[in-house]
Image (cartoon, rainbow, N blue to C red; front, side, top):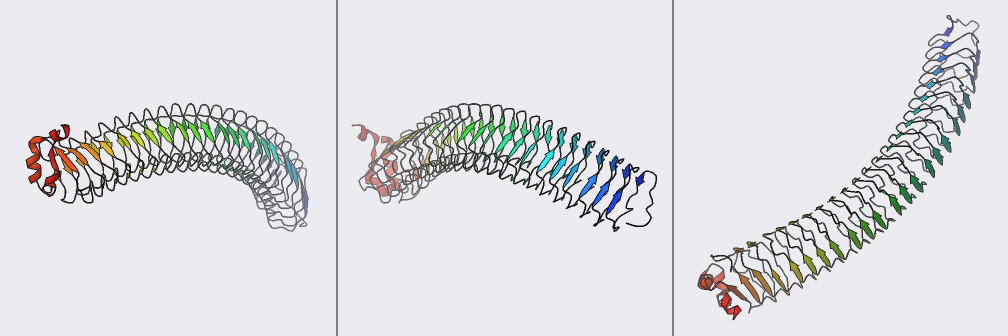
Length: 545
């Protein structure tokens, strides 16, 4: 310590002792310590300021030998005031009401802190205090962002009057096992992210949980938030041991909220109306879910929930794309109010055997593709079936679509066991709709006006076709329909139906007959491409006699 120290009034002035070689300082008259006053005093080990009320920014920053401090009258601590005081082990500030940003950040030797009247802790105040095991803040109402981030020695915390927890406040507190916040209303994003030892949480009045608030809390086994209404995106992302989740008043689950919770077996969300994208994706221990109030199921919401066997959504109206993709144990679904089924919604649900959607009007692209065990599909209100909707449903035997108007390409391609098709008012078909439906033996398409490319390609057992309004048949519509016997054509139109090529019926039964209006028999036999089949064209009256 220098021989002479100049004190100005009742303050230690800014930068006055920066980098000085001093080990101890005590003064009972000083009331304020200025910015950087003792910064980088590496040999300073102890300070005692009984009258100081204000400690300014960086006042003791990087005092790496400091082990003991006494400030019984201090009411405020400035930003970075004790930053990186790595040998400081314990601090007690009985009158301090506010702690500014990073005030004790990187005090790696700090094990306990006590601030009985502090109400506000600013961002990063104790960040990286890896040795901290005990904190006492009975009066704190607001915990700033990153306040205790990386405090890996903390095992439990209790803040009896805190109402808000800032972003990343306890992030990566890997030793934390239990937390209690009886008054907290809002938990900000990443607040407890990667608290990998956390097993117990108590938040009885919390209303909202922010993005990734508990993500990667891999030891958390159950959560109950009786007052939460909104669950943020990825809130419990990859909480791999979480088995039960109860949110009795939550109304909204945002995207990825429980994504990757592979141990989750029980969920209770009686008030939720919206489930966001991938909310439960990969929760492969879930066996059944019942969401009585949900109206919208987001894309990928339950993707790859491989243990799911039953789902019930009594008031849901919208299932977005890929919602149940890969739920390969799903055997039963209940969606009495759904009007729209998104693309790939049930893609590869290989155990699903029967589906009935009484209110659905639209089926999206590949919605039920690769549902290899699906046998029966009933959609009394559907008007639009998009492409590949039921492609590769190998066991599908019967489909009932009494209201469908439009069926897009490959909708039923490779449904090799399909034998019954009810589509009395369908008026538009895409390409290859029934391609490789190898056991389909008869079909009536009374309202269709044209048969596009490969409509019945390789329908090997197709014997009878009724298409009274068709005015155009593509060149490959019946290619390789080797069992074809009867085609009833054009009975509802006055002109000859156009035939795409002379090979339209290539590789079919050579004795098949095309029945057309008696008045058009001669015209058909002479028409382009039809003339090739002139011996097989007969009047409809011959069929009726």
